[in-house]
Image (cartoon, rainbow, N blue to C red):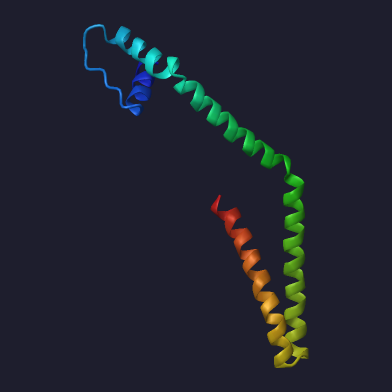
Length: 118
C-alpha cells in the first residue's frame, strides 16, 4: 500500500524527500492531497460514470442485433444484385445501382471496422 500511495502522489506531482518518518509523512500527504480534497472520490466517481455508460450500451444489445440484421440484409441484397446486373442489364442501369451499392459497401465496411478495432 505504501508504494501504491507513492504512485498516486507521484501522479499528482507530490514528491516526499524526507527519509525519517517517511511512512507517517506519506500517510499525511496521502490524506491531504488525495482524501481531503476528494481526488480519489472524484476519480472513483469518473470510473463509475464510465462503467455506467458502458452498462447502458450493453443494455441496448437488441439495437445491435437489429443493426447486424440490417447489415446482413444489405449484404445479401448486394450479392443478389451483382449476379443479376452483371448479366442482365445495360451500362446505364448498372451505373445507377452502383451508387447505392457503393454507399452500402462503405457503411458495411465502417461498421465492421469498428468491430475489429475494439
